[in-house]
Amino acid sequence: MTSEELRIKVEMALEEIRPFLQSDGGDISLVSIDNDTLVKVRLEGTCVGCSVNQMTLKSGVEMTIKKHAPQIEKVVNID
Image 1 (tube, rainbow, N blue to C red):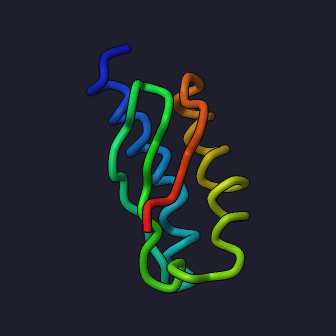
Image 2: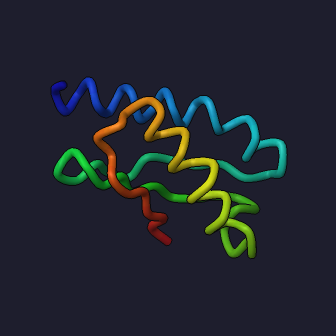
């Protein structure tokens, strides 16, 4: 898989999870994909400073991204 194909798959995963975040006044954007294994995202809106955002990141975002792109090993939030 090329880097561009990987980026498309990650963006598809973010599109899948975005409505759930937006329903609570938040959002998410892709910052970068490093070494084809580490995805950096930015939680936005009410997701910033939310006490459950780390849980959301791990259980929702990371799981959804790995479903679309299994080679991704980790997803981190960039403040």
